[in-house]
Length: 179
Image (cartoon, rainbow, N blue to C red):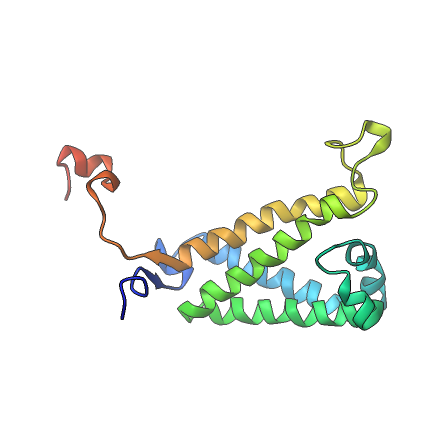
């Protein structure tokens, strides 16, 4: 194996800082969201609700032209439910801990692009951006926190195995107060 392959070690995120980690709460909250939102994508109500975001997205608009409104929603449902499955398995398997968190982060990075591609995000009557509308603007804003949760899980899942340098010692180690 090369040095590059040994640089990072995958682990279950919650194990990185102790068994009673708040990361477990983040993982299961994300799982709940992906299962709920993913299942909702199979309904006409949700398919029509997300259509304006998808149609106006330079990243996702191809889904509507290929699959139509309902078909695009079904594709997104499968991706969201797959993300939930990876996050669930990731509670036990390190590779899935990193994979599920990466899939989750990618989801929220994409949805945050809707801020610039979806009409009506900036509230014109309040002077435009940074004033955002209740819908769709404030609806999208929650994804900032969900992205942070996803990135926290991902970073905790991927541990750098390089030897610590003198510059990375804790303050206690620098003072010679190690136990």
